[in-house]
Image (cartoon, rainbow, N blue to C red):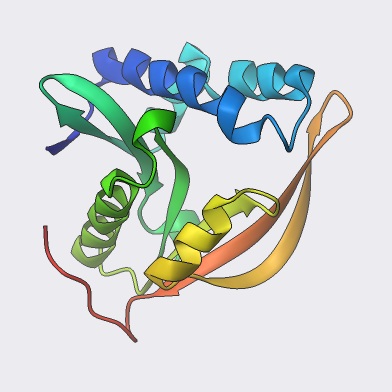
Length: 170
C-alpha cells in the first residue's frame, strides 16, 4: 500500500535512506560523501522545510513497515513539470516492483496537478538509470552540482513525457 506520509512520519524517510544509501552508492561515492549527503539531505530540518515548500512524501508499506519512499514536488518551479526529488527502496527489495509502483504514484500526482512531464536527477553512475529508462524516462542533459565540502553530484536529468504515453493505474 502507498500512502502520503505525515510530518511526524518523516523519520521513516530517514530510516529507508540510511538503510539504502551505503549499498546504493558504495561503488560510486566515498563513505565520507555518503555520510555528508545523508546528513545534509535527510536531517529533520531539511525534510520539514521540503514538506513546508509543498513537497509530498509517499511511503510504500507492507504490514505497517515502510519499504520505500518517494518525494515529489508538483508544478516544480511554477512549471508544468513534477519533480521526483528522492526515490529509494530497501536494498533487499530492489527489483520487486516497489520502485515502479512509487513512480506510478508520482505520475498520478502529476496528472492531478495537470503536469505534462516528470523529471528527476540521478547519479550518472547509478544502476537506477537503467530502471528509469525501462519505465520510459530519457536523458535530457548532464548536470554537475557542487554541494559543498568539495563534493560534486554528477547527475543526469531525466524526463518522462506524460503526453506521449499512457500508464496503468494502481
